[in-house]
Amino acid sequence: MDRVFSTIALFLLSLFLISSLASLANAKTHYHDFVVQATKVKRLCKTHNSITVNGQFPGPTLEVNNGDSLVIHVVNKARYNVTIHWHGVRQMTTAWADGPEFITQCPIRPGGSYTYRFTISGQEGTLWWHAHSSWLRATVYGAIIIHPKEGDSYPFPKPKRDSVITLGEWWDANPIDVIREATRTGATPNVSDAYTINGQPGDLYNCSSKDTIIVPVDSGETNLIRVINAALNQQLFFTIANHKLTVVGADASYVKPFTTSVLMLGPGQTTDVLIKADQPPARYYIAARAYASAQGAPFDNTTTTAILEYKTAPCAAKCTTTSKPIMPRLPAYNDTATATAFTTSFRSPRKVYVPTEIDENLFITAGLGINQCPPKTRARNCQAPNGTRFTASMNNVSFVLPSNFSLLQAHHHGVRGVFTTDFPAKPPVKFDYTGNVSRSLWQPTRGTKVYRLKYGSRVQIVLQGTNIFTAENHPIHLHGYDFYILAEGFGNFNPKTDTAKFNLVDPPLRNTVSLPVKGWAVIRFVADNPGVWIMHCHLDVHIGWGLATVFLVDNGVGPLQQLEQPPPDLPVC
Image 1 (cartoon, one colour):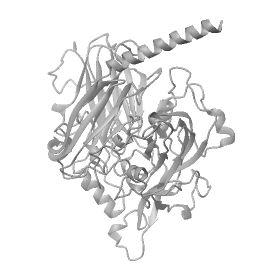
Image 2 (tube, one colour; image 1 turned 90 degrees about the vertical axis):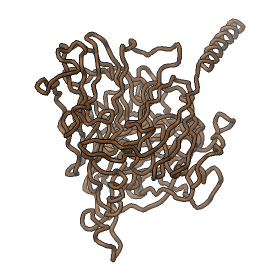
Image 3 (cartoon, one colour; image 1 turned 90 degrees about the horizontal axis):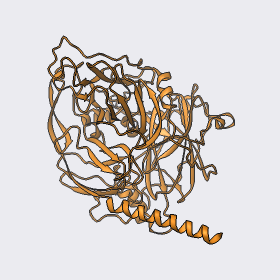
Image 4 (spheres, one colour; image 1 turned 135 degrees about the vertical axis):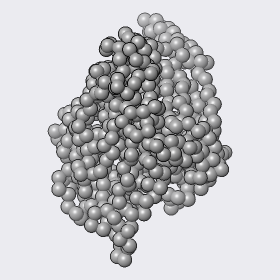
């Protein structure tokens, strides 16, 4: 009997090896050149010298299969430092290619270049790439489409068409000037002047109608739409007039399908939806506008639109202004109930392995803060409330980027004095996180502190929002990892009662979690990717203020568990 089982086991192993080798044989390497350069871009009646990739806005879409590799040579012909981050790509042992400035690499200086090399492994769906240096990602971004391995299929009927809708944010100014001004004053930066769909604001803005994006459909067909929130500082509601959206994927992981009329995406998040063209042939607005959860904070309250156009619509292509597309109803800007109903609907398609024994149990607060200005500081540099400067922190540490080395280089080469490994596993002071917080807790300490993880450690993080100055929803993104979201809720996390809410059966796998306003979220992952990985709020104004921390994951044993050697063309500081 044992011999029979051994024979069956060997046979199954052989089949697995054959299929693995076949997959490897089908895997391709894609080569791209990215030239970062200033390009004249006209929006809202005005032309700007915007930073783009290859003169395109948005930048090129990268289309690959699961298992393929990418070699992307980036040349910087702009006047700013730049890096490119491949958002959501696991980067297994290839942290040198992750891209965040001063975390895994020094920036590519003007006139310099760097080649990013990495493999897409075990991910299917939609990711994206963007600049990870100052506010350049306002215009430097593009989609990454990951199809199933050759010969494999989607876990849903193959759609007739496949469209990308990338939501963006546009300033009628140079975004770098906007953030530099805010850094000088210590106040909040000016809000954007428009949102965009595939780089175009749409019909509701000045000088924009003729370039409104058209998404064509045929009656009866089912299409896949990949929605990416590439906005700099704003969560967005998204809907299509009179059409239901069936969610089938998010952050390049499949989900148990569910149907909704509205999506809510934080910056960094992607959502794949199926849409059935089952309405009378006509033109329907695709629309997005802000989910603004911070009470009293200024935000861009405009609405971007594209048009879903049935090919048999009575006035396809050359409609007059009298035949306006049908406008959808969007949630109110502060509709947290709709946002929550959406984010809590996600499940994995089937039962998944979630670590139940935990090696590292972290409790991390995330929120804003206020820095008192030193005596004799000029008032013009202290324009946050009551003559202060805005800041932000995790566990009361406001993260400071190094400037002479990247953290990964310092770690790999053993350079001392660049960072410390004493990021706290819990807040230094326990308080009523979502209540009225004592002013004595509003000013964090500054530091380049990281948290060290052994390879293979099973990690749980309770993310807790705070009500310091103001509470809001924070999209928290972890580089180099996907994680399971076990639960989310409002108020202060209570381990005695809230652990009962954990989904340990089929939680969704994401790379960016929406931390609810005045609330908490719990994530788990296994630290199986060596390197230095930043976890930060994906509202760029907040990362600049210090709402971030870093995990340093040690090497394991053997080459598959160890960080690759740095590439020879890695930029120097």
